[in-house]
Image (cartoon, rainbow, N blue to C red):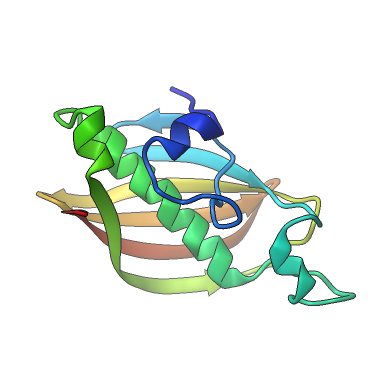
Length: 149
């Protein structure tokens, strides 16, 4: 299953400039999601991080993982209608074991791999990894809860 940015926006509330996922290329419900963000010099974050030496911030990579994880959680909950999804939101409870291994710069395609580690009720524990080409640039464990808005 793939998802366009328009389909992504039906599930999560984020919008430009804070929507950090351009496309989902694979979803296996209750297991994994693969998606990506094209990092461009036009991203507003590069106005201040860092002028003359643009580096995509690690916290933005983690947020992209979180957004991808939210999509995986919602798409795995088949019993929710589109209206019910619209009335819920994913709150991240913790981000653990975050590591940043290589800088991400304009022109990179940041690919997110999100795997379900544990799921019980409305609580999700996810393993997130981010790659540029074949190189892992970041990883973290994310814990999230789906709640009513």
